[in-house]
Length: 166
Image 1 (tube, rainbow, N blue to C red):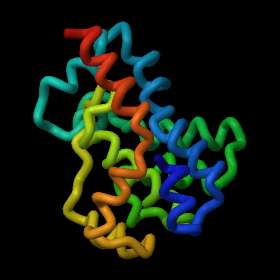
Image 2: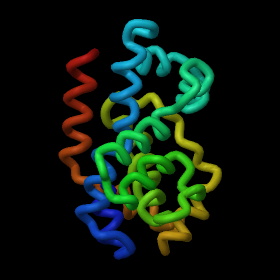
Image 3: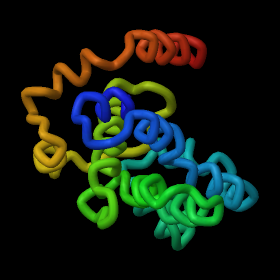
């Protein structure tokens, strides 16, 4: 979905957006390995709460998955563009170096979370959605077109996963 948004806005190279979409939550993998002994199935438990995952991570772990992801991206010598998107995908207005990619990843994450693809534990803040869309040259009116641009296979895969866990 990030790749589709990049193609549509022509602000970011589509393969970079695709990669950012894949790795934006890499910090969760790192945190999950770290907290497994103390908080087994940490992210599954977060689903049961109404508090934002970032706040829960900070409260319990004193760091959040965006910070951990940023540290990993730097350690692995990811391009600054990608590291910045990982760090700011929840609050793309805070991205200083490459806000366009952070906004694309935020929007892709938001679109996918609204259609319950995969295990959704984050509640993305939508209060600034219009501003982020505007910064990408999009409007709220474009939202339905963006939903239509999501490959149907994504929904089929999500449906299969939901049926398998039911």
